[in-house]
Every structure is written in structure tokens, then in C-alpha cells.
Image (cartoon, rainbow, N blue to C red):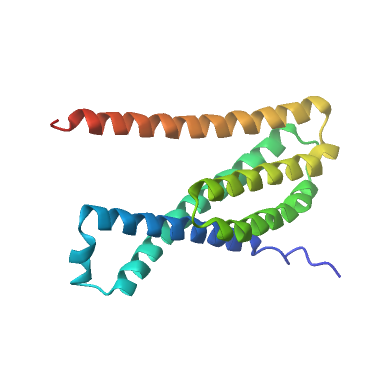
Length: 185
């Protein structure tokens, strides 16, 4: 007997694994920064070394967990919106077929733990996992799409995610430039 809810917790675990990878790397970089600017020794007067590391890890984990959970929510919305626009399936059978894509993220999250010393490695694993999940998604839903619908779906996803990341990137660059311009140098 195959239970459709068997892998229902995989997205949560995948988010936790990727968040842990990013958080461990972020904690290590924050400690290096704190030591280089000289506030780490001051922190040691109030907290133990283990307490500082644990607090940094928890804060970083929560930040990355919130970011990845928001991306998961946006991804689910974009997937269902694209299926509304382009799929011939009106019963939701396609959504059941693509649930196994969570296993791809689960495996990617586990692999990312091996790259905690390299942000490039973690980002590469995350990007590769996302690409593999997208290819799996397109492969699974292609029978319920016409050829123009398949092209439209791929273009829709590419356009929406590109716009999102370009907007965030542009906003970060504008924010950085305004901060740098306001410094009294």
C-alpha cells in the first residue's frame, strides 16, 4: 500500500537541512568578523564561547529558515498558478505526481551539509537541487500539457523567478549605494 502522505514532511526537513548548512557557514563567518573587529573578547566577558556559538547558530538558522520557507511558499504558489494557466488537468492529479520532487530537495539538503565550509559549494548544491527539481517537475507534468503550454510554463517560471531575483538584487544594490553615499568619508 502506497501512502500519499509518506513524504509530506520532506520539504520541512529539506528546509531545515539547507538552513543548517547556511547557518553553520554564517556562524563561522560571523565569529571571524567579530574576532577581526575586536568585539569577540568583549562578548566573552558576558557569555561563554559555547553560548556565543550556540546563539549565533540559532539566530542564523532562524533567519535562513524563514527565507527558505518563504521561497517554498512562493514556489508552491508559482507552481499552482502555472498549472492553472497551462495544464489541461483540472482535478489536481498533477500535484500528486510532483510531490516526489520533495525527495530531491531532501537529498540536496543532506548533501549541502558536506559543504559547510564553502558558501559557493552550498549555493551550488542549492542551485543544482532547484534545477533538478524543476526538470523533474517539467518531466512529470509534460503529459498534461500541450507543446505551447509546456513552453509557456517554462517561460512563466523563468520569467517570474528572474524578475523576483533581479528585483531583490537591484534593491540590495540601491540600498548599499545609499548607505555608502551617506557615509562621511
